Amino acid sequence: ETGVTQSPTHLIKTRGQQVTLRCSSQSGHNTVSWYQQALGQGPQFIFQYYREEENGRGNFPPRFSGLQFPNYSSELNVNALELDDSALYLCASSWGSNEQFFGPGTRLTVL
Amino acid sequence: KNEVEQSPQNLTAQEGEFITINCSYSVGISALHWLQQHPGGGIVSLFMLSSGKKKHGRLIATINIQEKHSSLHITASHPRDSAVYICAVSVGDTDKLIFGTGTRLQVFP
Image 1 (cartoon, helix red, strand yellow):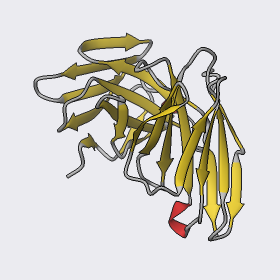
Image 2: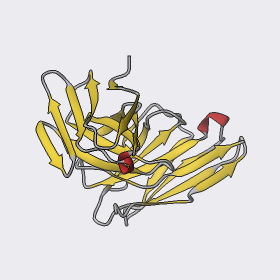
Image 3: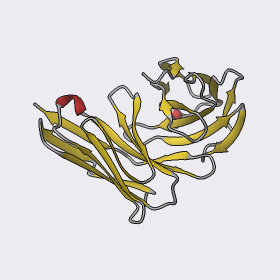
């Protein structure tokens, strides 16, 4: 068991709404990465947080934003939801650049 | 062309068969990961390697840095091995992961 948890498990939103997804890192991990996985595709890197600062970003627009808290839990916020944002959102925690441990994911459906 | 390519995309096998999944990449990496994803989405890290070979139970992963190629082998496959196997590489200062599209494996009794 990895110890990384995500909430909620499933979420349905409508176009234009805002959503917040949460990730609780494995104990002792100071780095969290977020990924988007569209149906039938491999995950795509959204961004990474290290010690509460954004530490790298993939090719995602600014309406995708994040936070990491002092206890190293994390949030992914998406504003102005679009239909194409429907996907499985995965977070992964690690100690620096070591092996990443993934959470079970949040499946977001945008109608 | 994707930076990480896997083959085959789909694989079926009979229980007990030896399985090989291949991964090629075209970028400089700090490490290569083999991951397993079951229906429902959860991803489990199987291996992280930067050289040579690693073994865990019936799973073996190898990497050839010069040829930019890695293989995942499953010996004595079992129906519970049925899953999507994903190759990913760590790149850049953040060690962000670039993923292949996965290999869907089905092992029949």
